[in-house]
Length: 206
Image (cartoon, rainbow, N blue to C red; front, side, top):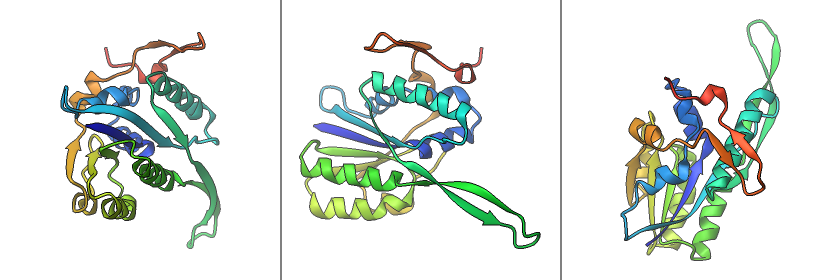
């Protein structure tokens, strides 16, 4: 059985961030997701990672770019959305500030899921997210492709979306042991010959 995975990067990131286990952010997503497959019976044919770069935070963005390069070295396909600026104000004091809101990630994930199903690239899809915004896409998927399976994978330290569970054919849960087991190497040599090193902030505790 051919399996394709679609990862909501920021959903996974924020779930890890809440645990304060920064080294889990240097995660080998492809290796971790293969852990949920039946050996000899299922093959992970594609892994897609959806996220966006926080351009107003240059230090964090640099780490994110390194992580993306590390993921791509394992065969993960990256799809970047964007952030939009939004002016907010305080009703009490009248002060205002600029915030940033992630845009298009869910849409890009949904579009690629349905496109790949139409192209018959997989028999089962894994959606790694707890976001209920993906419910409409999951419903359409099941209506159009009843012979294909759809499973939802909850990020570590985050629960499943009940609405997604009511639509999908099954579920998995990422646990701390998975993150500990599937960490990317500290040093990675890319096909271009470029060497990238794990950011110090993501070093495992001694």
